[in-house]
Image (cartoon, rainbow, N blue to C red):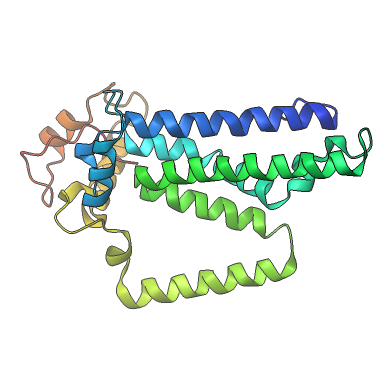
Length: 231
């Protein structure tokens, strides 16, 4: 996208980017493992859908879709810019039809990518998407900046009153390593490893064995096999 030098080529590149994200959302959802879903309703929905049998990591799917949703969202919000190529060459009527098609296509892309992001249930991906949308919205209008500041203060108040664990922890009954306390313990062990092996590390795919041997987990327990630090 950044390498395009004229407006028409830039629009084509952006549309290709958004279409890739929409296709990736469909493929990613069909590759999710329903058994790993945190919510029963989402699990039932995924079971009803065709499945590729890939058991894709939900965080990978959600993190990938985070790259596409802000672009698709702002194309839907500003269809004139998304479909402005026909304004001078084909007349105002054709330009209006072009903008309408651009709005429909971009709204469809937002729906597909947004649905994929929600079905992934990745808290990190949802948080990253919210930050990206807030950062880009702050550049569009002054009133949006103040709205974002107000929402940020409201979110801070909710976290202050309810606690960070209540906000970030998944549905009750999930594994301990998925909770905020469990993640903090894993991240602490990862910092210990970085301090003790700063130059060479411990090697590929050795986190679980090294943690069990040198940095035992207390909240998660010794029987749980955690292949990485969830960082």
